[in-house]
Length: 121
Image 1: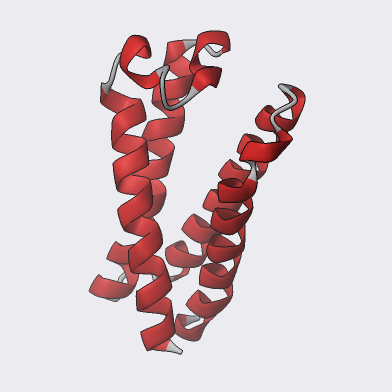
Image 2: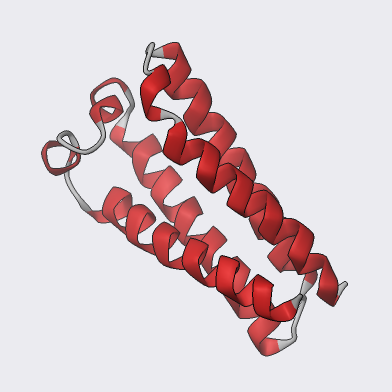
């Protein structure tokens, strides 16, 4: 189960560091072509979401890697599930049903990571 955890958590962490990093540092104009919702969301909130995604990615990897507070890995995975629920709610409220596929996949992967992370509890 540990190998499965590291595969799924590693992929999620890479995705969230990239995605969160973009939200944290890029301007609204740079994000607009990829994320149309940034026009209707305050940039401060977009930045907070980006930082939370980065922290979630670090939370998936660092606690099990260091052996310190390993329960935080499960908490980080649950937090990323909540981020995706929020993302799906945003897309559905904008009538963008066709674009929630990635959100669903990320939600499922984060939930699986939370379940696999219980190996350290």
